[in-house]
Amino acid sequence: MNAGDRVESCAAPIGHADDRRFALIDRAAEARPSFAAGAVVVLAAGGRRARMCRSARPGRPDRRRPDSRRREDARSARPSGVLGAGASRHAPPPMLRRLIRGPAVQAALASLLGLYLATVIRTTRWSVVGLEHAVPFMQDGRRPLVLAFWHERLPLMPAVFLEARRRFPRTGIVAHVLVSRHRDGRLIGGVVGRFGMDLVYASSSRGGTSGIIELLRVLRRGEIVAITPDGPRGPRRVAAPGVATLAALSGAPVLPSAAATTRRRIMARSWDRMMLPLPFGRAVIVIGPPIAVPRDGAEAALPRIEAALSACCDAADAHVAARRVA
Image 1 (cartoon, rainbow, N blue to C red):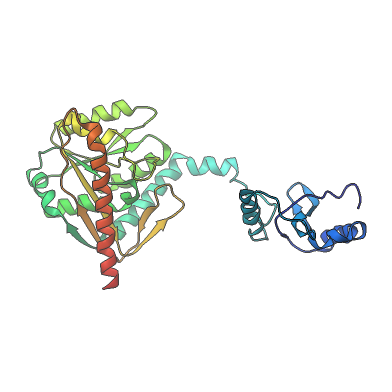
Image 2 (cartoon, helix red, strand yellow):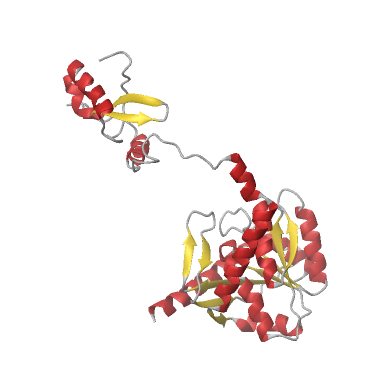
């Protein structure tokens, strides 16, 4: 074998079979016939090199660690082609990234998403479970309330406020939504703002305190605050202390809620597995009993809030699952 033909251990033969690659195998076979059965040539990103699969040698056990074998097997299972073995996925060009992140493009995207959600909400048949838990707050219109739901159900939650306004038109219900100052938060704010919600911008790293202060002012006026306790970055279904702290300082109860629909897509690659609704479905809004948080009991109330939010999601999913079967 020539000195320039590199031989390394590998997991399995991968890549395209062409004359240049098999030429290296032929030279390897002439030099070491016992290795010929395990030789494979791949075109790597940096050039050509021959990889030798040591496990193919007769009588030699595969001494690689199990986790190493799994990684090699996963790499060998990748499809060949435009982004085949040895190729790397390239990020969009910097100019394209700047264009996508620009204010004009973000505003256009928010408008399109808002139009889409409005179409979905109008073409979906809605029902409400647990409405009796929300009636005292909706009828009065001047009782402070912290409406909480997991981030994964965010695209469905504008329907909650539209349904409340439809059922209680004289109360003038106004909801204030806490969103992040991050670019993604501004995009979400542009979408939900279409449905008549007031936006309060805050961030866990910058401006978080100012956001809490503004929400306390809103609650003191007897209005409604909507918050996703696990947003904007997760972990999924793990509540940050802010929701309990807000309820404890304001004296407003936390009203857990969720929504689900028979026609949806789950965004499996997002950190929260967000539920994207589709038009012409049958959906349900589930509202749980309000949770009172004592002024000195914010930390103790957090597990109860998490359990209540997850229970609402489970109830909503079970409700639409039964409808799909029926």
